[in-house]
Length: 400
Image (cartoon, rainbow, N blue to C red; front, side):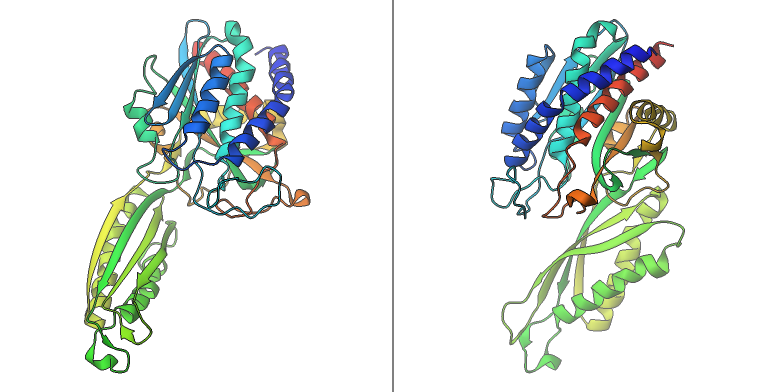
């Protein structure tokens, strides 16, 4: 590929930096939860329309799809997610959330800005594209069943059919401006469960006349940790975490019911199918020991995010050409976080990129979903340039 084209992409992305910061901050100040992204999707659609793209609004609910027609050829897609989280932001930044109890604690505002930046870079180059690029802006990644399936069912990958897809997401475990990915599994499958412990209530002064659901629940929580530590092969990563617990009404009343929710993360499909049985066996033992009953409701969620090996290699090659070889890294291990980008990868080849945003000197050190989460905004134009160049590189490779 012409070095002049790469230079043009990098230069144009750099010139978009101020606009990308403005867009990111506008979205950050007005966070919207899943399938409520009305202002965000309107902003996205307006930007795409101003670039001369064909724009579909209301895709899969509040999603947006923009199509940049190039020369006749194949079609690839770039995807961003748009939803925020129900978290109260702890920040004094001038662009902090203006909506109480909501914030972009996962960086979807930055993901959206980077993919919009790629559209800004590629739009003037449409005559030099050996194919077309779809820009998919998806609602509701944060909560299952997620927005990816809604977008797919609404034909976001069709008309014209998409043959490859690239996603990007902020990643606080990498330094700002470093892009990482890996072939194969990059993020875990996500399953959730609800447990209800059913005992018999009574007076707190006479526990022997009751069946204490709270004590049984405490035992269940501790015993469930042995599923991973004692029932799963140590070489097979797995997580079982209890996220919520609710039960009881007064200090002197033995609770007759406790409700808990939790999550299971796995990378191996065989182990994933085994986990409900292992959890059930633990609960059966606890229930028998405490004389209580239980109810388990288990829901499969997002599959493993599994990158196509060839696409992962191509994306890293492109990132190295844009950012320098030292800033394009192969991740040694997957993470146990989940992503509904997995549903796209089940249908077409693609790759999920992690954009480093950590900068200790700027105090940008907090993990995803933390109330003090923020990003180094210098990465926005870098992500845009990498996505744009990757799209061109894939289309040229496809042309052969």
